[in-house]
Length: 392
Length: 178
Image (cartoon, rainbow over all chains, first blue to last red; front, side, top):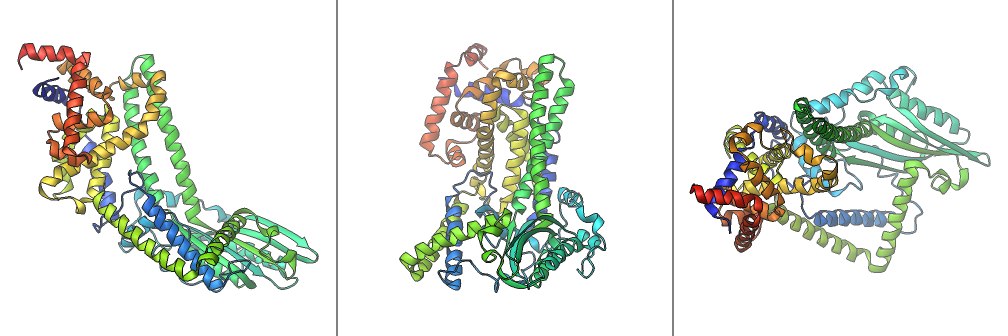
């Protein structure tokens, strides 16, 4: 058995051999400055997803919330309906600015961060440097669209430069609207959609049309700047008779912040490797460092790609509009029009509602509601206790 | 909680060295310490007062280091054959050349011996014999019972005693009496 005094001495020698980085504390301070600014209130929350923490409680809570939501929707719309019609609910109702926009299907971690961001939303903070940079670098695709949409009420420059509804939150907005237009007005409606997108600083990503008999129908997918997305949805709804509509906002601020942090850390690592590379003389050393450098560079580029994707998704909302004249292909909600994001969303929604319907039919709505509320309360309490106990 | 700047002045160096001994890599240790400080700072309102503070901080640091070890393990395992070890041996990865020169091979040998210990034993032995935590504090830091800490320390010391790299050092120590 090794002597404790000896072991302490050896350990100290080994530890002292590591040179403490001069810029280490400064780097922490710099990073903490961001953290402190973002979170002025010292509310202990669940750590980021990098933390090793049982997530089943949060997942269970999310499932229960989803389930409850589906039950409520199901009860509100009645069983046996072919589609979940939200035309009365998904209108241009003003969404509280700066609050959580995760109105459907967001994951639990996003929900957790929503609460924290809600606290931050009121603080007069500018975006971080990286955020500001990425916003400035966001694609300004519709630069040639100025004046292309008479009557659309959009100013391209102002649309592109207008701040997002919440300067801190990054929200991926998607919406689907099914509209029935009058006979002979399909083409005009398509043109108006294109003009609307361009006029608001957006663009058309996909157009699919089909004709059954003499009644055409089709799907148009628009990308609209997030700042004017809700207004665009409202405008689209005025094109005809709304058959159904849904909208969704997913807060990805937490994911974006994670990417920023990881990019910062990898950048620092790359700098250190470059320093090592400049000092290496032997060929074997240089090759080894070069390999590590390549690996880090690949990780950086992957993260930058993800960041750009999030930038794009949060800068432009996706609006899928299905248009049809009366009698087209058996209606708007049939398979012929289901394609792309809108189709996937419809499929998921139909499958989910169908499954919930089966459960509700067997067990009773009231019982389900009670059980769900009880489970939600238990899960929330458990999460709170765990968060207090295993904060880090 | 005192100001972050003061806290860093006081705690950065021992934390960094602790992370170095656990991770056996300066760059990883620097990242881990930064992450640990940020995490602790973010949750500073939940920091316990008094005696509980120190193990709490080490718990954050150890968790961060262990997370990094688990994350890096496949990468390290896959790269040993194609140059990772060479990189580890480069300046900047391990102890500085000056320090190695000053301390002879002791630092390197101890570092290697520690690196060969299982993670749970390495953490325990570093917290005890470098960071100077008591067994009870270690138990709080690693969320295990004091008895578990005691047995881990015993096992770690046994393994280190059997390590031939430390055998010679132990003999020198016994002969030198220092």
